[in-house]
Length: 290
Image (tube, rainbow, N blue to C red):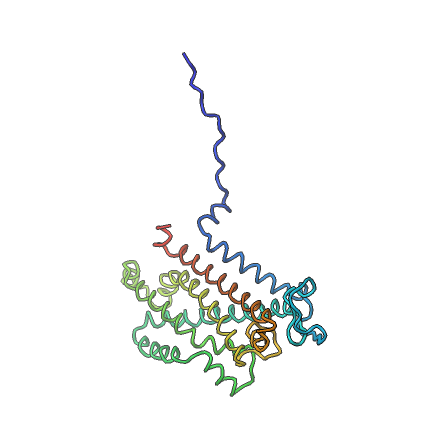
C-alpha cells in the first residue's frame, strides 16, 4: 500500500482576545485609543510642556520648528503648551456636561415615562428649554454674573438635558409595554421598585451612548462660546480662546488657528467613534447583525 502524505503544515494561529476585540470593535478601539492619548496628554501637560502663560515678545509669531513644535503666537507664547493645556478645559467641560445631563435627564425621563400625569407638563418645559440656543443663554448668564467655567457648563447643560429626557422617556414608554413589566405590575410591583429593578437597567446602555454625543457637542459649543468671548475668560488657555486670539494673524501665522482646530476636531472625532462603537455593541439588534 502506498502511504498518502498528510499535510504537515502548522495550523494558522488564532487571534488572541485583544486581536478579536479590535477586529470586532474597530471604532471602539481607535476612538478609545485616541481619546486615551488626548486625556493622558492633558493630564501630563504641566510636565510635557512649558508655561503656557510665559510671554516672549522677541519670539512672537515664530513658525513650527525643533524649538517651537507648534510655533508661537502674537505674544510669543508657545502654541504647543497652550494647545495641550487647552485640552484640559475642553475635556473637563465635555465630561461634566455629559455627566450632569445624563443624571438630570435620566431622572426626568424616568418620571415622564412612568407617571403620565406629569408627562405633559414636564415635556412642554423641555420643549421650551430646547428652544433656547446655548450661545444666547451663555451671553444672558454672563451679563448677570461673571464669566467662568461654571457659567459655561450651566449654559450648555440646560439645552442638552431635554435631549436626554426625550431619549430616556421613549425607552421607558417602550419598556412599559413589555410583557415582563406588565406581569410585574400585575404581581404588585409598582413605584420606585419597578423603576429601579425592571426599567432603569434597560436605559443605561442608550444613556451611555447618548452621553458620548452630548460630550462631543459640549466641546464644540464651549469652543464656539470661547471664540465669541462668551466662554471661559480670555486668559484661560482653551481651544476656542486660542483660535479667537489668532484669527487676526491667520494669513501670516496660520498655525495659531489650524493646530488647536485640528486638536478639537480629533477629540470630537474620537468621542463620536467611541459613541458609534458603543451603540453598535450595546444595541442587541445591531450586535446580532455584526
